[in-house]
Length: 270
Image 1 (spheres, rainbow, N blue to C red):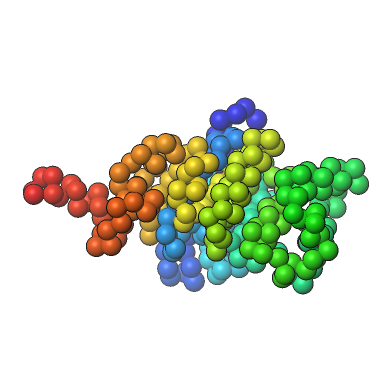
Image 2: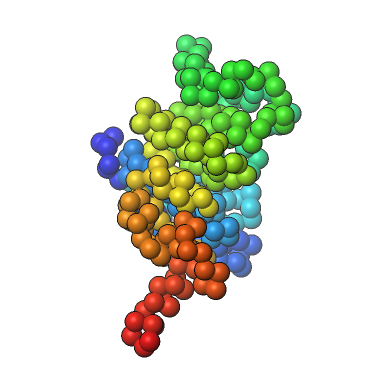
């Protein structure tokens, strides 16, 4: 597919939990081929729900798509089962339950290999994974439960790469990790995009880390997209700096939407 051609289109997506709670409220966004796109927001904003809707895993959380369209390469995929969506080239690196902790690193990788792969193809991808994540080669006989947080993330990404994704969905890459390992993992994600021409949709609370590698970003608040722009624009936006990048932290204002409303009122009525 041509670089920068639209790969994923989400149109007016609504997701409900238990047929009652509206978690995602009519959001629309686009991911172009070979881009890294970041969806940013605080806990509970609807980021994970959005990824689960795209990947087909909503059912495990008693949620469903109530309205809207999800198109991948122009084909509607909303409400299709996860195995069919994975076959189309969309693979999720989840926020929770990333690996099998009672299996070794090597066993975790083995169960992620599609049965259709030849031995030569499997060897190629194993070599590729150990190239990007050499620490996994050193701990390949260690149980997953004994890995560090960073190693678990590396193993989860590696398992996803074995499925040969065209679109990689990464949920909270930085969660629970220190700044040094977060920077290392983010740079590896960008390198994987550049080397393998994989498109990446990344959801993150750590806005600055995500925007440093992303081409484009969206701000998600309470199930709504309240802002979108290229990464440089978002990094240089004073309101984004204040509320998402940890600069000029003012606790009395609670959201990007509120500060925009506050400044509008002050401008015209202050």
